[in-house]
Image (cartoon, each protein chain N blue to C red):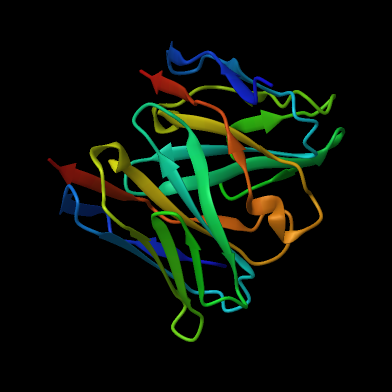
Length: 116
Length: 111
């Protein structure tokens, strides 16, 4: 199994540009999520999904969209990039959506995004 | 909502024990987790403890939970240079999204 994969690894955008961060998992996990990691702030949840066709907002959803058309894929779209979105983005998945073990998450390697 | 706090930095000498501390605010947290992040990589689950346990040991790792004080600690025995990383505490308190991560503690191991 490849686990959780993310592309690209690095990206530089200009303010106002849009882009999609890709995330895929091959473990048949129901639960998938997107986090951003900023210095001194830990991980903050952007959006999550408990299955194909079901998504919901996390703690910091503004400026981001998601969709979940398949179990495997969970792309994150930046609609109009802003410097405040400069961050490291992590996708994660968990096999369980209906038990406390949703906290046992598998993380991708991250996408380092810079917005100038 | 849940708030999870950690100190930002810890430095220890190789061979010593490391103790990384975490406090959380939601007394209904049922599962508590420790993750490790090596430079340039994603987070990797190290261990977890259920709220009805006081202690869990896994080789060099010992997790202690004081539910009354809402305090969690991770002890790494015989710390090695390969243990240098950022360690995140996380708490689950119910619902799909309520896995709250702390700010992370950067562990530096001095040879």
